[in-house]
Length: 416
Image 1: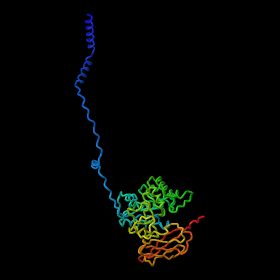
Image 2 (image 1 turned 45 degrees about the vertical axis):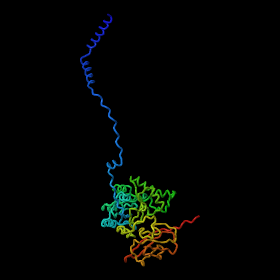
Image 3 (image 1 turned 90 degrees about the horizontal axis):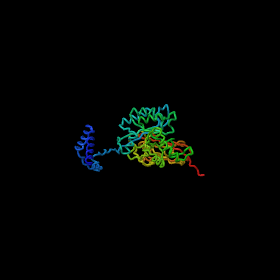
Image 4 (image 1 turned 60 degrees about the horizontal axis):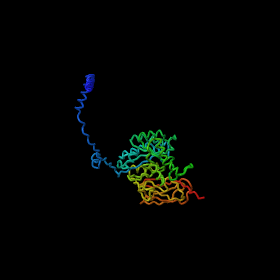
């Protein structure tokens, strides 16, 4: 009886509990039961993706086209022209000055003869094998940093559309008077003119004699390396080229030029340049009123071809133009030096007309070899300390021709 009563109580509790569920609750329970029953089974796991194949020589060649090879004409030749001041003769004198009308006439000659004026960067790219240049190309350079390069030469060069390079020595910049300023150099830079280095003080690097207490080595490093850094810092450029003051150098100077990272260094020896010309001995034809034939020979492209020797051999007519002994501007210690020059650039000389004079002494007997175009002489008396000018005159095709060079004699210091 007791068991029966307990069962009735339990059934009554279940009945009244179900009555308390709302219709909404009962509907939600029925909904989830239905969704669970209808849910599709989970899809089978996919196999892991295979990694992309690494490029091989076959598929890399097929997908990446090879860059076209650059064709460079290594048979092309270049002449480099060097100027200093471009001023009217009423404003200045000196063998290195060229009047504006004569400068413009030479630029016109370049155009009339169909010569291509290339930029320094094009020249360096050709040297690296990255770019071809026309068969007969010209580089125009103006040295020192006279303001006439900005005021006078620049408009003429712009008229012809010729690129050019301005070699400056930093001590001269911004000095006023006839010197160019840093602001003007900045304008040249912005116009695409190449700014090259010409040392700090423009002193012959073969005979360094610093006036301060610093060592010769430190002085040389300042002239060659620190001067480059000054230009780069003041103008925000990469200074790629160097011009030797007076064209002078020696083996140690060449080492410092290489250490400084210059892409090309220029001398004052006029030559036709080939693709293989040494980067640190690039010859240039200099305008000089005493040797106008040098520039004429350059524009005619019939001068000697570079030999690439540190000190060209005077016995080889094709070694260089106007090479002399002693060298132009050199200081010697021999009081009876051999005076020697290659006269090939003067033309076909009449041997009987060739003569040599030395300032302070006069005519000196000389020997001239028509086969090699070499003239040689030696003073009959010892020289006294000072500067000397050698003058050689002759006749070529019935016309008088002449050339000059200078040197200095200083006796060697006697040991104490």
